[in-house]
Image (cartoon, rainbow, N blue to C red; front, side, top):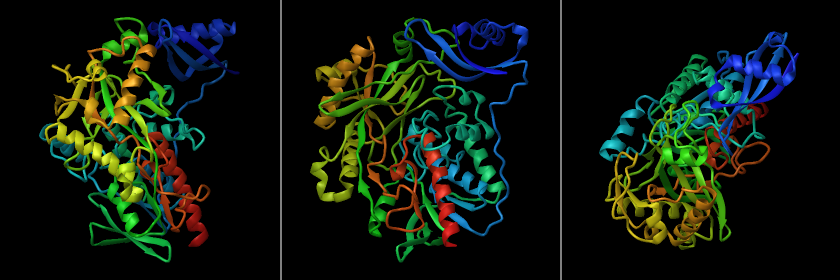
Length: 519
């Protein structure tokens, strides 16, 4: 017999199996000896009062327990049919895995370097302020999530099988805990090895990878895509193309527009990175100055409405650092990341305001690219204010509210450094005004959040793509071009590692259906 029950345990006992077994027996009013095993299938924290772990468990009573992890088998592809996948991020990787499972050869085309070689370019942008447009925190094997945290939480449970994606990550080296944690996280120190193992699975089973291969043109005839051109002179053909380039591949949007392939502007969000001492966030969230050794660095999620616009925290990184995520010289883009231990003394989060066509009117002459140009305008303005390198404009939270330049700044995790700046004037008024109002609201929700110990750094602009590549809701194919499957964040259909991976699988399924019907 198997019973599913929830246990509330003090942090002292979250890893104490015998204690949990006794609690389960007490809950079910049975003898401890009758319990074969207690398997935790969901772990979360309730910190409304004194923090406790909520464990959703399967209690096996006189029955052999089953493994939570389910391995997925892959066989070598024999079919001559192939799909070109543009982009080696989560959408592209999981599309490739799914294609192999379905017997179709994937060819992954990645403009950046392999996951290990990327590290030199990340060091260059951190230490030397040199931005490689094809290899950075956004571009390269594994995509933006590889070296910017590896958070796996998603609300896209209706779009696909979340458990399947987590299983595949564990199968390729991720820690088993991601299968049970309410907010699973791999960490940027461990995710590169997982990404590398996924590539090995793809190649060992007949798939192909091309690095340092930027798509420079498309081969389109009679409203059907037949292939792509990489690096200006190499032609690749395939039976379908999955376009999974991520939200920062602006050149792809311009390439589509050049071919008169329909794209459209979409809302997104921009703002700042806010950084607090992690101990302060722990004190607020856990109601104690000394965090228990078994409790993770605490996080938060905040949102409100200010004058009909949403303002919300985004990509919160407890025990993390702020990183330069620029993809071109002359712009400043910030993001956050954490390693698996989340042991940095800092906590940071995006704090962003919803942006739509009402905000980018001054750029309407650029047509469908108006929102993108507005995004670029903010990135260039903050770059210039930082001193024409990757130094970030910064301001104490309290000074931002008061509208004055900070005479000094707190310590920061941001390696390129900060410079005291009037961010209240630097950001567009519609953003600055709403951020100020939201901070006053958030300070009521989290007592102590608005403090001079905290600071904001500008700017956080790449929350999602300002462009959508429209596709049919049933076939997932572009609304005008046969064989083209817009996918993931860059196409406007995902928002993070998990949702992008799910969309990658869905597009792979759709591409296979298309191939079977047409070839």
